[in-house]
Image (cartoon, rainbow, N blue to C red; front, side, top):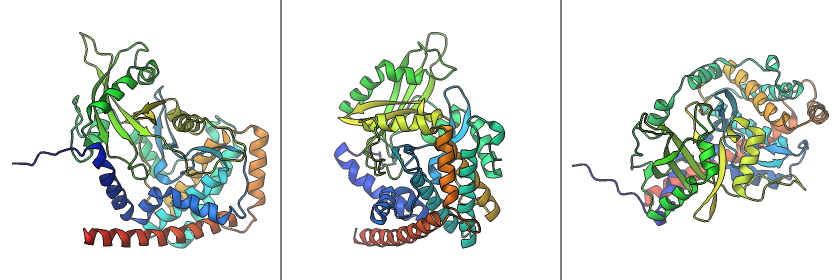
Length: 406
């Protein structure tokens, strides 16, 4: 007879989540980079940002790695490649996003056993794509770079996905229950009562009914809710999954949707001197999303649970992560160019024409002809790859020692 799973109590969760996070980060150097955002900003503080170009003070992702880019759906049904995670979003120096993305590309290239020259070319292509996006007029579809084959396939996959696929991937079933087990843990009475109270607000009901296919006055009902062990760098924060039904009546069943509730915390990314941002952590994340990733930002709301700020968003079937770890050299360079343009578009839409031109000119000035990539970017990424490689190996050593002792 199978042993019945017993969900950990709220007091036991942190120990389990910390162990899971350490395991995920030990699996590969690229996974370590994704989960160790603080290492990037420790390096930035220690280096004093020497030699980096100082861009205009705009909203930046703050954690611009490959896993945080991918297809995102809007409330009106459009799908585009945008930034998917804005936990670290601040008003800061756009050069920080470029270095973070460059580090992620370099680590992915090493994990795919691509030669070092490909890494140099990827950084060059990333910067070329970024500057091309700054040079184009906002909304000019003809100026958008061609999508690499891997991204075309990902977009076709995203556009063809429906609720059934999302439900099977995220919760493993299509009915009105969330299965309690290794990924989903049972809530206590206080947690469920607080979630019910949040969903009783008009603001959250409006978020759920915002999709063009739903009536604005449709009723929203919580069908089930659970604690969700999800992510990597966010493991240890509050995280809940809520299965909701929309618009049920006597003649038709409720349409279902899955809401992700995630704790918002103070960012590790430094903000620009004198920058004014929302004081609340959740409001900051949403403001950053609306500036950088409008498709996602319009689907997010702020709330409070257990005295902590949280961000609520409906998970859409079209929202997917990008994975370029298995690309060839040629595909990797095309992908780097395209992703650079995605970040350039996110940054550029916040600038007027004069600011875009000034930032583009500054980047040109710092990129002498004949170099594969700007020296400030190349030297930063090389330094960071070494720093993270050392930290990753030490992380693995400690993880192995602790596992042996246990």
